[in-house]
Image 1 (tube, one colour):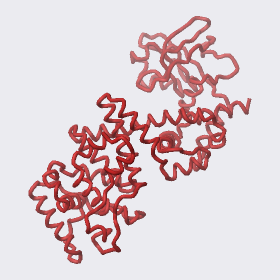
Image 2 (cartoon, helix red, strand yellow):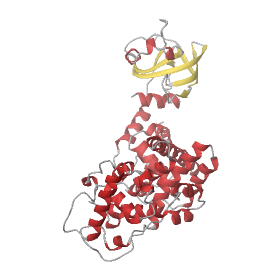
Image 3 (spheres, helix red, strand yellow):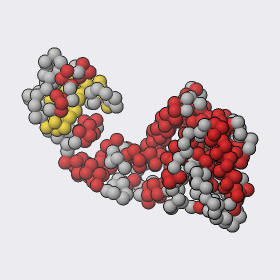
Image 4 (cartoon, one colour):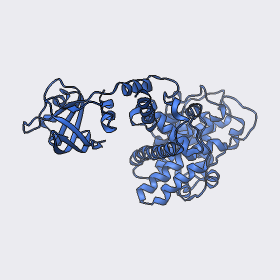
Length: 429
């Protein structure tokens, strides 16, 4: 496997025997080079000695030598500076554009490394490396968490930039779409985002001072006011009439299909009608919400800005179908914290990067460190494996680790995986 070749080369886990090319030249690796994450050779700036002659250049790797030809490297100028072709199987000779041959090294992966890697990839429940996690130095864990946090910031910033482009460069609109997505809390996130992209915010702005009309906009575009439903109460029919009037006035696009909203495995307090009513109230009273959120200094300030209840009707309803015992539908503290973690913090980072204001990026990190860790199956699994999250910064790192490394079986790029393989190799030697 090419990924394993990369790992063995990068960490110099070479066999104890001499390294020789397929034509017999002695290979001495002075510097394996730097991994290249972009197009081109796999390792850049390597330094080698071939039969005592020093070479500096790039290194390319393949499972089989014939992939050099299949991938078009023989006619690609980017590969003219390749000084060594590292392969698992030398099934042919290869050359550069000018016809000169490229030395090839068949790299044998040590048995203990191959076995350790196979073990890491086989588990489906806990990460196989859990056997060594509790013994890792705190500095190792902390440094990996810090790198994972930056990775997660960057991934979310890319998502925000894509939404910003789709919203014509309006940060307030992109913030609304992201906020709506996170009101879905996983199960309805995609549907909430699709709904938010349909909302004509400039039209809603004209009626922002009227909560009833904002509800009509929001529930109508969600596809929840399409049917007449003669058995529903007067509030439903009043909302429906208002929505039909607004749809004609602003020539609104077709709404979502109501069937897209999921209720199964959803607590009544998170039913779409309730979340949409909370968003309506937040939008109704939240003029310049984005700018105020960007200037808030603490989690307490953000919770005060983002806390949302509903109109009186929804204190006695979870859906239009029937009345329920009266209770406040204000979003709870733990839900608000999730909104801050998944909406405000990434926007602070992305907005800070966009404007070149490092203090916003630093505030994003400090907010995560101020908040309690998330409580979900990923965090609980890692806790059971010996790695606990002290705050939301740690829990975000663990989510990034799980989704981008463990779920993809990308153990060779993981520092925990590296520690596991290193100890596995030591124990077998």
